[in-house]
Length: 371
Image (cartoon, rainbow, N blue to C red; front, side):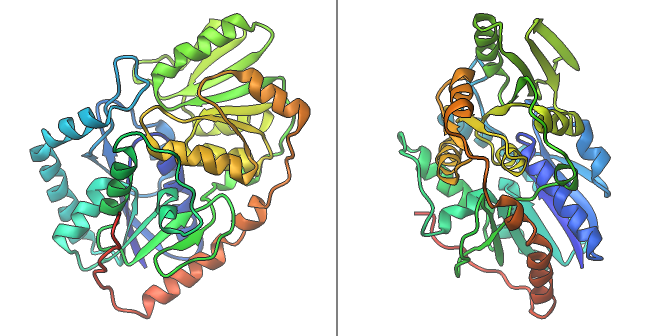
């Protein structure tokens, strides 16, 4: 079967998931005809993505979060307003997506949580099947735990998730742990790249941190300055940052690099990170304890933090206090979890999904209410 991916370019998680899925396609004899990647002025596309994706990459302007001046908090109101002012730009993106889909005529369009992907499928009604994949679709599971919400954050998170899945015939909900699928979603394991599975974890003398919004870098610097006995290696995708920076003897900042990040993940004492799904899964697979700090204003990350604690992967915090993770390691962390067994079921799950798709006619499916 021929696939086209539509990938959200916010953070590294959706991109690494797309790389992992492309490897599964290849292993089972399917074709990836192209990848449509949402971009914005806030982000630089990591070099590893173009290196690891075995297909043409088409960049389109896509909706993106707006942060405060410190590059930390997500401002929902300004995010909505600014993206509404770019309607004509996004219309051009939709036309470009339509041109690519018509030229390639894929059997399946797989959307990694990009808003334009859902709008495209909902309004253009392509002949291809439309699938969506992401941890976010777990909100349709009866056992999902929502975080306490402020204002309309929960409403907009659910609305965005609903919009990305307009007309989807298959909603693949990534989960830290095994859950039963329902009539609304198919629960699937995390998408981990083969490089993660080949690593041999060791116990190093440093903490690893990943920062999705560069404004949190100053918090890490402040903590490292006050605690010179702790070694910290930080990764970020700050647009104008050098490849490596050493603001302090015990702290280094690195541009996002897939292989270097995974190498350090295997060797670190633990991971301190904003609450993105993918990094937590990698740490769980390597049996590394995690402490997550949800990005302020990003309700989805608040839910991820709850799920992290529930799964036994680690703890949640509201600041980069590495001592909290150090205390967890010394007192009560249990590295046992079932994510490795759960992840090993992906090939069979994918085989079943594609086998069913081959025997059924594509159809536009109205998604359930987001309320």
